Picture 1 (spheres, one colour):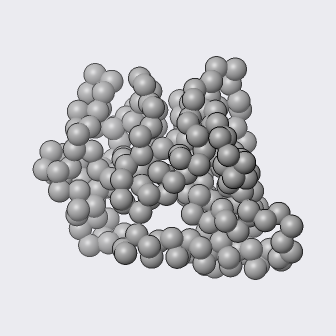
Picture 2 (cartoon, rainbow, N blue to C red; picture 1 turned 90 degrees about the horizontal axis):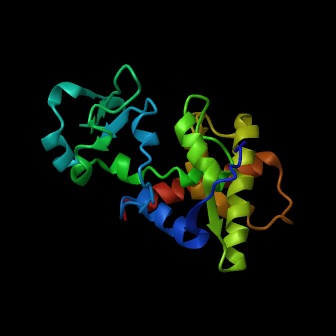
Picture 3 (cartoon, one colour; picture 1 turned 180 degrees about the vertical axis):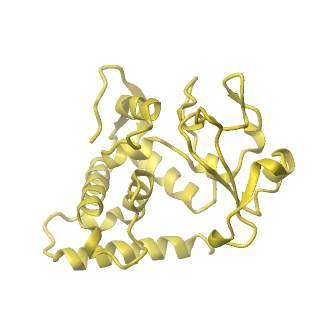
Length: 216
């Protein structure tokens, strides 16, 4: 669970953030995260996927830093991190390829952890501190309902892995938070009476439908 901080950072209206985040997951746009000077995601031992369509990225990252990950698709590559957990493209505390960064980096938005009510992981201290500071606003009651639904989705996913189809259950916080954002509609009606297996099936179905929409 998140450890809230007394220091707060405006995360924006929840409904606007959610729509933008889901569009980013579909590859239609990047998110506009108010990072300020925070580079938590750049120093937290993340391997960065670089896809064939990231042509500008591939043109500026030295080939020796990339390894093939064909199991994730033809031409998909990964860039590892340095011994201190930082991205090789981070120079003097700033991203040296920011304008040409891959879609993976454009998609990354630590506000999703605040939305899901979970931390980014045990070794993500800087990100977790940031997550504890985010505060969404709720111009409409539907915004608050959507936030509660994503929190409920994340809690269910964490607690009911056995009810999900094989290979469709995320084991890491980022995967859990993203799946919750893809399938939160299942939890918008707290009065619905479904067994755990049916809820898991509905979450999986919405996730598949969401993923299919990225190619449309």
